[in-house]
Image (cartoon, rainbow, N blue to C red; front, side, top):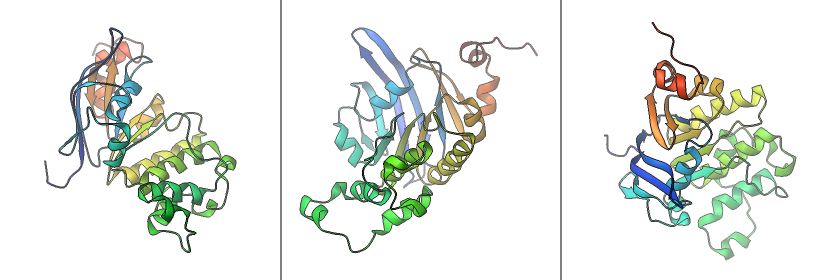
Length: 249
């Protein structure tokens, strides 16, 4: 693996709740630039695995970002290491503008006095994030007035201004229009080129259009992994996830 390239490496990750094994020995490696989709039926352990990576669910095994072990670290420390996530419902400050949301996110490392000081100009990282997520023209619009898809893009922008190097996105296109889904896929392609991105997704058409690689979970385990074509051709995936048995060749 080339030096300086970010990657997320999971080894034998397990999460157990009151005797129920939600994630059962998952191992996978996601390199920078590999837009990885994580799919599987409801209850497969997808969101729980993301919770384990980000410190929200106690886990055993190993989750390494670069050379740093994440298992056992607090949520805020993992975020400061550059591991960011979104949730199925966008968590933005609805009464504040797009610019204010991004400025607050960018100031997460600044002290209270610095945050209180009025800005005379927009920080370059905020301008860059607005441009990347396509919200430059809406900088003064209240987040609560944004379309559903735009709120998701704003939340991704808030991770970008915090310099997140790993982005874990939980069903980012849920509830979006067809046009918003295409725009989101193109956005993921742009941000994923220089970052490590994992997308938890149910929308199979979206996955087929934009995934670079796919990991399929079933009952907390990795069922299959590879390109979209490889995963779709796997008889186990056809039977368990797509709900049909493989067609004999």
